[in-house]
Amino acid sequence: MTYRKTIGARTYVFTSLKDLLAKASPERSGDLLAGIAAESAEERAAAQMALADAYLSDFLKEDIVPYDEDEVTRLICDGHSGEAFDEISSLTVGAFRNWLLLDETTGDTLKRVSPGILPEMAAAVSKLMRNQDLIRAAAKIRNVTAFRNTIGLPGRLSVRLQPNDPVDDPKSIAAQIMDGLFYGCGDAVIGINPASDNYGSVTELLRLLDGIITRFAIPTQGCVLTHITTTIKAIEMGAPVDLVFQSIGGTQKVNESFGVSAAVLREGFEAGASLKRGSVGSNFMYFETGQGSALSAGAHHNADQQTLEARAYGLARAFSPLLVNTVVGFIGPEYLYDGKQIVRAGLEDHFCGKLLGLPMGVDICYTNHAEADQDDMDTLLTLLAVAGCNFIMGVPGADDIMLNYQSTSFHDALYARGALGLRPAPEFEDWLRRMGLFDERLIPAELRPGNRLLEGAEAIND
Image 1 (cartoon, rainbow, N blue to C red):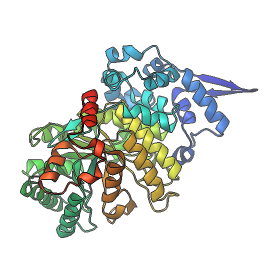
Image 2 (tube, rainbow, N blue to C red; image 1 turned 60 degrees about the vertical axis):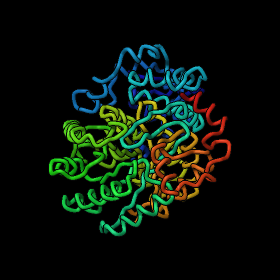
Image 3 (cartoon, rainbow, N blue to C red; image 1 turned 180 degrees about the horizontal axis):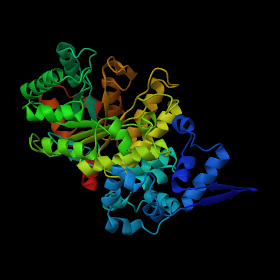
């Protein structure tokens, strides 16, 4: 399918939907590296105008990655709900943007049509949206999940407590966990990136997490972010596994580079489901993603990195995960060059994931060789908290000493909660109160429990 747009005396021609999506993307270094980005601001504007005139139904006629070659495409297409799509089937991409921003289009409406939205549709409409549009639309959507606590409720912001150590030292990790708990972090998950994927080391860390959570009766979940095959083995051997983790991408080839497939993910899902360790819910899968992973693996099929990122969300939603987060600036400036590109990508990823029904969090981060700093992360943190992000990261000092990148800290989470009147997951908040760790002064007086204004707001949200 060919798309055209004339600006002045020049007509721009886009040879396919894939080409149109790539040229319409806001500028980012990864698409420039791949040689698929618009060559000028004028060409980008022409592509965005042509994309606005394209119909959502076009995405049902043309695969971005061929159906016969890619299991992610097959999973996405085979799971598409025509009934849910009917409500928006007559819209162009531009009209879809306008519809998303209508006051009459509520969170309930968006949840109803979500199974009918292909990831490529979500990516397409995001390319026409300003940052404020991405925030406004995402803020309408609440994708709530639960395991030992409930994540994603209105007025709540959860935190993954990330106690990494370069040699997996149990004492160091335990000290970091205690530090994070004192700051009220850890309700999303206490999640360790192990320095080694060695089975013995992984199981030792699993027992450490389980021991702390059990000893102090913490209503949260632990996770060692090892390869899913190691987690499956740990489950088979009786290790105390709460969440089943895996990094995923938007094409079959990139997932093969991670050593996984849809079948392996299904095996991990079935193994986790057999444990029934959740107390208030049954969501237990945890996925991490990030723009640029397909290109770095040579598995991008000449598609733009943001569209492929949205396709990763299409894969994730087949497994009803507890947590999904984009590690937005982690791969490096080759893919997201500076703070401006990282902020934009974080808002895009969060919006697309929520639109597709996922419980989205964001690792608000950058590498030390990117043109970004902690002020950029403060900006993105604030914007995402306004947009209703389910969870962020809590890293001691915002500096991960094992993965060697910069993220958000325990006190950054306190800032976001305090500035916007957000609170931890309810079960975790109750535990913090019982332990004497919850400071009511962090919550504005008008938002404290028992306040009539808060009760009225909760009634409206219900």
